[in-house]
Amino acid sequence: MIAEVKRKQLSARVTFAGEKTPQEIAQIMNESKLFVMPSRTEGYGIALREALVCGLLAVATNIGGLKEAGKSKNCVFVNPNSDEIAQAIEKQLNRAK
Image (cartoon, rainbow, N blue to C red; front, side, top):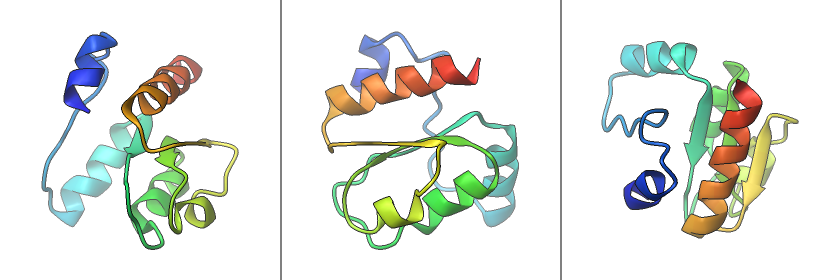
């Protein structure tokens, strides 16, 4: 995923944050424009729902419970492959401008 972001020249606009505390997560979501959930397997997708409630645009894979959690005009669903995910990220970032 990181390589695909670099290949698409999105590195200046994409951050892979790693593990964070709940307080840090809330701050990051409130400062962000886009949430990406590129899961290959997933239950309900609480993090996706939380991002959408914070008003973020989102990209999620169309697997498991993500389609239910991501019901929103702000969420784009794609197959779990890097090309489709990267294209959707680019589309949503352009929409966020």
